[in-house]
Image 1 (spheres, rainbow, N blue to C red):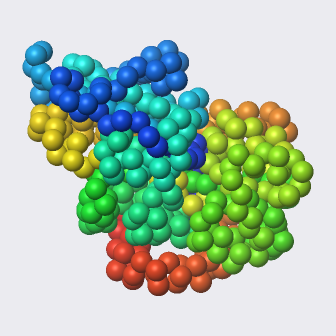
Image 2: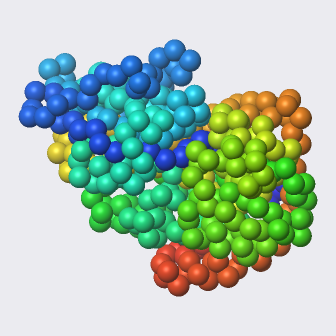
Image 3: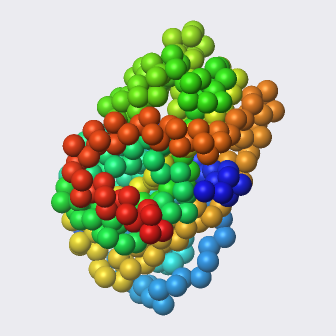
Length: 374
């Protein structure tokens, strides 16, 4: 792995995310039974600061002027100002233009509709149409997603992009989502979870004894334990004050999250550990997708693919802004050398074995082999 390339990809990547949503009503086509997605002052519009340039419609399909209008809720836990919300805004803009307004997506960010679990369950039931979230909270429903919790394993961003875009592993993912009643519209990485800390970290040994806030994910806890840290599961809402009061002296999050939510204010260092690939998903209730006419499906999927590509290609500026903003406040950015990343991977081997035992060698080997091919 070339260090300059990796850092460039890192600086091209970091979305904020967190947790999101329950409860809105799913929205059938206008004119059918049910309530269309209502406009809301709290929803994320696709205009203003988030406006982007829309490329020409590649599908060659023009929906009829008198065609039905599909109004779809998309619930997420993203900060409205975060890069992840900008990607969704781009999606909204693209699908509206390409469908001539016949497919209208309304984004409800910032956990307006509930928790990740509630949001995913609501999409399964058809109470909301779509969700936007990272993979970790979905592993309760789709166990194979634990393969992405192999901390420190995947540090080749280009290989990860290719592996998730197409191929046998992507096909298997889509099938597993369909098995639980949702369609995987897209999955795309925009970077890694990194380390923000008041403790200087330049080697594996420096991690020993570090008190780090982690998500309530058994594999994340096992990973940091294997590295010698003292992982502490806490609600994200408690992180800032926990750092401030010294309950923890570190946390792991995407760069954009650290910056937008100001948790970096209680830290001195940003350490580029790129330990967990930060995968974003957009899912849709399978029955709603199946009921949509084929021309609508083609346009919606093409817009999803365009938004994912845009998110990967254009997030460099957002991450550079976040890094520069934190450096301006006196934080030091530390890039760990390849040799230390290798040592972290070696130390985490027991966690990989734990994940193999939980989800099977087949899934893990499929993922590893496709990463290697790409």
